[in-house]
Length: 259
Image 1 (tube, one colour):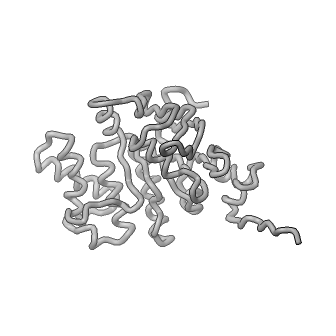
Image 2: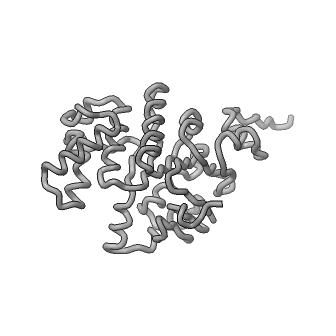
């Protein structure tokens, strides 16, 4: 069992949804410092909804989301801004600004939240791009890049303020297997060399097995967590049929109506 000071994110009895529509209810889990933690599940299970609440885009119906001991839902004003600066986010599409170069995209957070001069901001932005394998591409526009390079640039931008925590939304979506494998290796390299904690939303099996230290699996029917653990343990030893089907990539057995 992890000690309290090893826990970076603690989710307690969390219920989330929109208006009166409950999407997930009574979730409790922890994310440890320095691990790659994956949120997975089938389509419509609430992965994206959970992520939006974890990064503070929506407030929960009930429960708490503690990041390094501070409740992101309860924080307001300057306290909330300080808390939001502790982590970076890479959105599924990359969400780079198309009218800005890669250097300008990565500089955005530095311009907004620091008092560094232009030379210092340029240096930091170049260093972040170098970390993700994009040295020499600083002046390229997003439209000039492949999908994999756009994802790498988005990770560099998320790292601009040196956060200890990064949230990645479907990082492998739309990528070919070779590019996806390269992105997986980048995530592991950053986790190991910089000690960054990653929370990754994905349903890509190859990536899950490549990067995940632990996973939680969400379920649309129960609106909760139906499995927690290492992916290979869940694949080989889970007692829950839908969990085994997911990890073994098995189709559901069709239910035929009686004549």
